[in-house]
Image 1: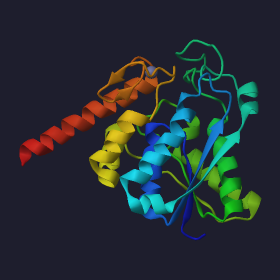
Image 2: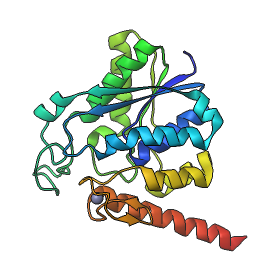
Image 3: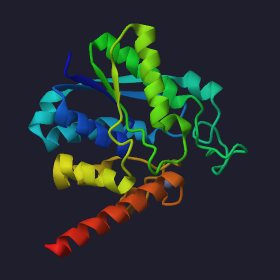
Length: 239
Ligand code: ZN
């Protein structure tokens, strides 16, 4: 399928925005998620309700949304120890990387996504990795993704494109992108239904969505939301 895409869809803000981006561009869009021994499965539980809600945002999107693939990669959580897969404290590791870094995770995810896309005849793999104001994961960097694209294409005799629409934008711009793609309906959907918080807390609803409000993921999301709202207010005032 020349105009098909497979989106790495975790149920978080970034991957939901990427999914809307793909649905706005490509005729056929499938989704893939991974169970890898996460400490909580809240993100995964958010996935199907988000897919249903996205189809309601736009009838065009509803027609383009295809199969969802949920892949079991429990083995990753067994060999790759991090604060997301084991009961370890958050904070920094001895080498300066965040304790939430799951070594190899994006390499494995993108490789499995490439396998599925190749077999399904989908020309693109879309992921929400970003090195602009990220948590410091080395496998989110542009060079990592570009190197992997070369490797999977050589290794499978394929011509896949690994698309990263969020790579060079910050969290405030990710909210703006959602608004551009799906208006207020998509922004509301992302606030209400996506999950980003590392500790899996959905008891408190903030202006920017549910979360503990303290972990790195919540802070990034909150900070991006605040800057997005501020920029929007400034534009409204200029009019
Ligand atoms: Zn949190």
